[in-house]
Image 1 (cartoon, rainbow, N blue to C red):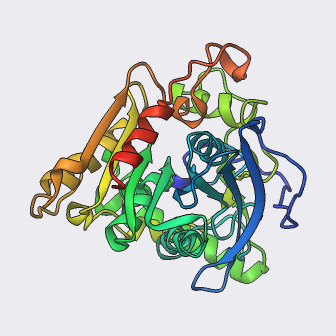
Image 2: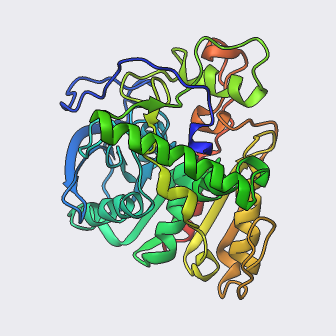
Length: 364
């Protein structure tokens, strides 16, 4: 299964579900932003933990607000927190949150995922922002990064309260789990083999009473590792992006915790999204095809990798595809660096002002 896309690391490393009060992000706190830890619940009763970022010294009584999540398996101390803080610097009230079963948020077993529950997590974040006095409830958007880009599109398709959506360096986790990378396993035999392997893991867990972890970023890095694996390593396994509560930084996922993604298709109705959407991807990202195909399907109702043909989007004029020249997949996690492990100079490849303009333009 593609969620196990990187070689397993078997370490006894569990999440610390006690909320950390000290600053423990992989980026420094901006002097132009205030921050506080918050909690809220989704409709399943799972308590989610988030970081709320607010611009300092502005005179706006009600702000445009953004909920941010991702990458898939990461924590809010990493890329989503950086996105939230950078947008708060530009005048937005922003919420970076850990999804259910991940990081400081609740839910058992740990480090699992659900197409339904994780989509609900985004909508619960919108609930939270809607109730704040400093937020204009008619001007709420979302940002999904990596696998949460696909989840963001799914949420936007179902919840019209979401007025604008950015999917950055996105994966469609349902497509990659069901079809493999570049749809190489898009056949019944491959899917049956994957289903059989998952069934065997479930039987082992039922007999032993214990689940196992799998996936996570390979460590140590093999010399012959593909470029995209090196890309992940340079972010998750170095000071640039390592965090103790991130599954991607450590021992990965509950082995069959993402089983339902392989038998689901997220983006069936995205051709009906009337609100604004910006899909942003790196020119050199191995995942670029996810964003380009999702954009084409969203606007035209058909695309490679999507067997269903639907009607073109009724509001295509507010849909955008932005390809960032020279950027890899993880360059859009934090802007990228000129040397591995974040030791060089930042490439500043994330166009923060461009994102701010997109949200402001589409929140009129």
